[in-house]
Image 1 (cartoon, one colour):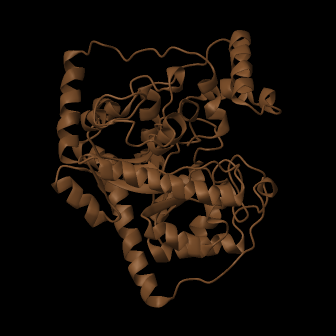
Image 2: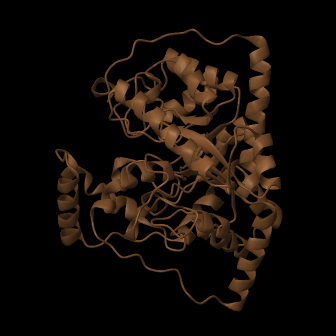
Image 3: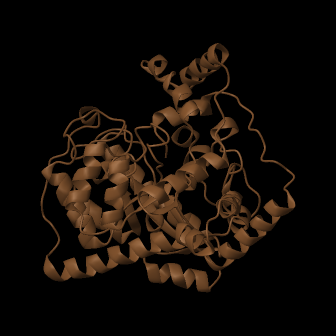
Length: 420
């Protein structure tokens, strides 16, 4: 899920500008070429919040919300197929504002929703390894992996971390919107100046398990500490480049270079304020007005008033996303960039023009082809880089499991309110 600032436009009314209906002959040719490339190397998308959409908008009713046909919001199986998505990390997000007990309970419920959703459709296949991903591709199914968004549901328990791994979780974002007891968030209070000793142990145990360390949402100091500790590649499952858009959730140049040294992947996201600087400034202007807001109705009223006073937010486009992909590729290297859409049921001008739903990935690849990207480079972006990092994570886990037992380090939990 996105940070609080990116929820702002959900509370106001807006109309998205449609992607141009008519393509030039050259553009149509590039789009067809993009589809052909993705037929052979289907997209690995790092982040989609459909399980949370099912929870929030359909009371967790997997059976009652049919994605086998055209469905509401941004994600269904026909559009995943049209978008040439071959592997999807489904986020099993829970809010970081919950108490520890609430967070752990909600986490188990979100994993349950995702697993029931995957089991319901023949087009989807649960995957927990690179071998599973390849098996799904060979059988024409969409490999479906689970990613936890925030370490707060662990309640500071490495036993819980291992249990979530056994339930199928294959990456974990160390924090979400708030800092937790052992790691600082990009958007939370500075409590530890990065990772605590227990936070470092979480990273080490993730390495031993084969769970990918995800640094989206964490502070710069946490990024650095995690990169210092990890023996396996890290990912940013849904972040963009701070050198282009000065958002706290984006990755600074110094860390982009360290990701390359680590062998990790920055998966560029489709959130407007993360890829368009004017949009970021527009949203940042609303933050002081939200200090005492507690209900959705209050959020909506503040948003409507802000729009009346300041006008509609600037739109972000597919070209903005392509700019960020190129920036990461130029700064870190072509082997260290991927795609992490963060589709989460947004509407109106919370959508990227040209990437309004999961069918749009070929549009993005076509744009990069028009910019001179080779077939090999877009294959790395779409699929190869993430699967290479995942395979290296598995190899590190095999080695570490032969060298050390599960960690028994403990830390007493605090309340969510005490954690920023």
